[in-house]
Length: 23
Image (cartoon, rainbow, N blue to C red; front, top):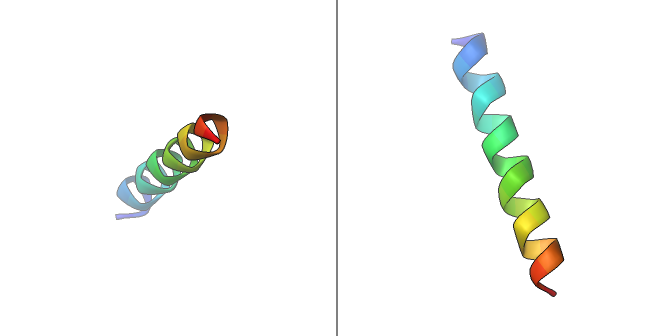
């Protein structure tokens, strides 16, 4: 469960990074 949660956080970070670079 913790591993999946950590992986999800990494995905969210990548999404935010892509959105930030898009602007």
